[in-house]
Amino acid sequence: TNMINVSKRIGYYLPRYLTEMMNMEDISASIRPIAERYGVDRIYMSTGSRTEDRIELSMDSGKLVSMRDIFEFTDELEDLFGTKVRIIDRESVRNKELLQSMMDNEILIYEWEGLREGD
Image (tube, rainbow, N blue to C red; front, side):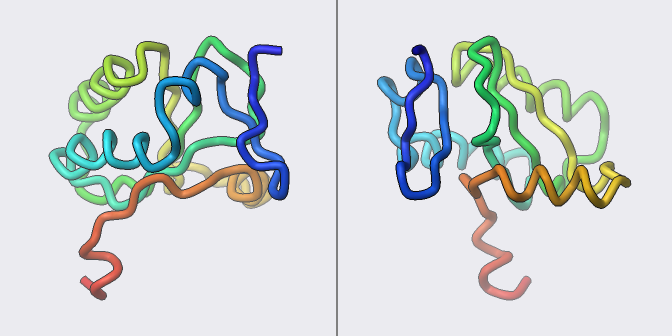
């Protein structure tokens, strides 16, 4: 298989090529400057997807509101990971069951430090 179970306890999967290049700390550190530049509050990586043709992320968009910025942000993430990225703004998900399903199958990979300080 081209997918690797990166946590037997939780049982989430990421593309094998990604985990061979980066561990979760590397992924978080690599995303941080991009997310900070665009004012994103949080980024989550889907762990339930078993597709290798893209990485699935969701975000709390924070200050990232214009479509142009969202496209540029996505392009930078695709350059970083070397593959397609699909990103969903959690605030745009109106179906509560879908949102809960997303939340059940994600891990937090970036959080703006100001959120932890109560800003």
